[in-house]
Length: 143
Length: 85
Image (cartoon, rainbow over all chains, first blue to last red; front, top):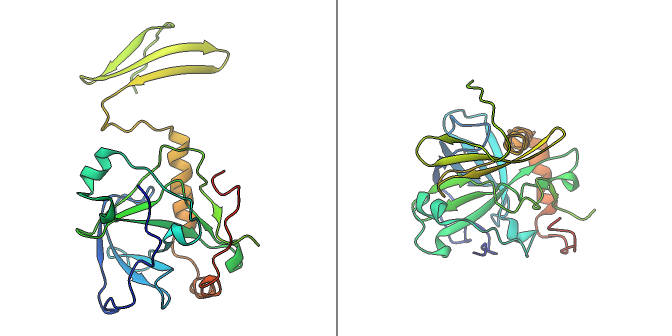
């Protein structure tokens, strides 16, 4: 499958709507956090935030990786598609967890274990991809 | 923890349909083969730990640093050849 190259929320989407994701396959290291609110951090919906509904101060910055890594095309297996209730590849949105550094230019994205979201039923899963050559810390900028 | 001694080529069976076989022993490196149903994920433990550690490093960043990300909006960098390395 290929990931979407457009911002997660189109401009016309209601800004007041806060999608709540059901993390059916939790973030590694955070097994008890199943429900996350997804909100955007900028006007065009490039950077977004996953905020735990179980613990309000637990937040993650995520980004659709296609905006920074146009060739990135994670492959998932049928079992995961079933877990997420995916009927069509267009159901899926790929999000990469962003680790911030001392400066914005040091920010990295996790391409090895993305969060896949079925935007139709709001089910999500962090998936450790089979391609172990993918980087865990891919710089977002070339500087 | 259950501890079993196995020779080269011998296996242990876990549950009904998971078979772990010793394929090769060379010094302190043991190659093992795992036969398991497709829905059973087999991962190297240290890789799971590495991803969990990366998740922890990404968790709850400083709000000022998050605000600084706006600098990156609108200027995605040009793709590089080593992106997939």
